[in-house]
Image (cartoon, rainbow, N blue to C red; front, side, top):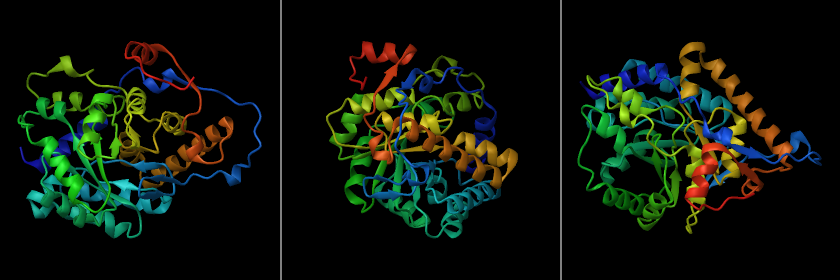
Length: 345
């Protein structure tokens, strides 16, 4: 199967597969503040993720590209939504276009439709410095995501099996590129041990990409003759990944993705230490089923939910959300206790 055919397979299965019954953001309860002295119109949604200055913490996370006409249309629509709403956008893995120039238009369309926005390029951890630079140039990127997806590759019938050079590749790219390099999981989350290892490689930007959203184990199993179903529940949920990252001694710029359903989940992610949060699968489903204007409407609604949470927590700017008190319950609390992790209670 070609890379472009695989991309279309991923889109189809990602839209149809079942989500986890339990979302770990429901294990995080924020502490309500009854009185507020804030004005809705003066709530500030701008944020900084290291060198990146964003008008909103919400961004369209990596989805697709390199799948011919269909993925050109998807990325064109998402780029128009990004431009209209003023939020940033990441493209899907560009390795297909790096290896086959005929696939480049599905990525180049993003910068054409959104010439002034913040765009994130995307390559795998098998990428060389030269390939990373090509990806950045392809979309005029403001930052680069390097996705790490070991389990997905192992389940993927045609996936990689040799990961011996991945850490070195990441280190070389981080030290060579003049823009922020974000290491991104694809739905399996990050432990504090992983975060500390990435820090030792010079990484200062991470997207924890936790379990809870699109489940790539299930997506790839739908493409196998004999599914590896034992690994469909593998991974660290996003809220727990954020707590794990907060329990390292490193100063990092943290992004949350994976199972963020609404603005309240986004607010919880920011309280847990994230500086921005990405959404992908739910926005793609809305685009395919209802069109661009519905995605724009959803983004405005999510923004409203985020501002409501800010008002109810007594914060006029996003940076003040970090460190607000919260309570962990259920499976998340079990994890926190057994891992002896620090929380803000």
